[in-house]
Image 1 (cartoon, rainbow, N blue to C red):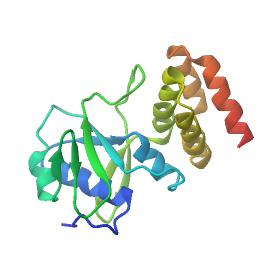
Image 2: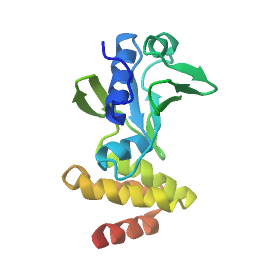
Image 3: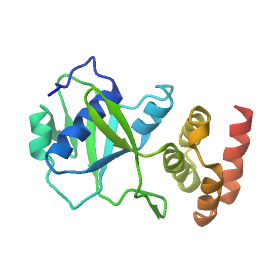
Image 4: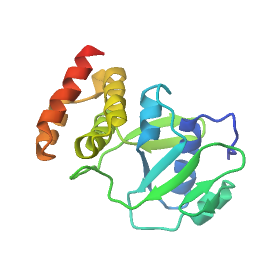
Amino acid sequence: MSEVDRKLTLEEVAALVCATLDRHGVSVVLSGGSVVSIYASDEYVSFDLDFVRTGLAAKVDAAMQELGFEKKGRHWTHPRTDYWVEFLAGPVAVGDEVVTEFAERKTPHGVLRLLAPTECVMDRLVNYFHNGDLECLDQAVVVAQRERKQVDLERIEAWSRGERAHEKFQEFKRRLRVR
């Protein structure tokens, strides 16, 4: 089994956590800004690994302690990495839409389940749509540009109507063309 170390990338630490939890019967999906970091090749940096449980609520303590993480409040930290882990209640959702299919990335440290590029863009846009978060809009644009072939803009546009944010979606499309 691999050990957590400062040399590991965000993706490697996330994969190690995901694979260890799987061995303990806990299924999780990486979401949030750390997914942006992965798809945007670290153009956006996050140290927060947000995992959402996809199955029945299960205790993660044994798996996290096996990796050497310690619980501090709602976060798990490790003395040999700057990344910290948080577990969010499911289901995995982007706005009002529940997500049931995920991407997987194989690493030397295990398989990482994470939001697919389309859902990653939607995850960032929901923060822009409902909170006016311009940094999240920028992150959505970066991921859509980098993962152009994997991002379904028609699906995102239809979803934006359901989020009552079609006008804000038009701003996203405008920025996507400009970049």
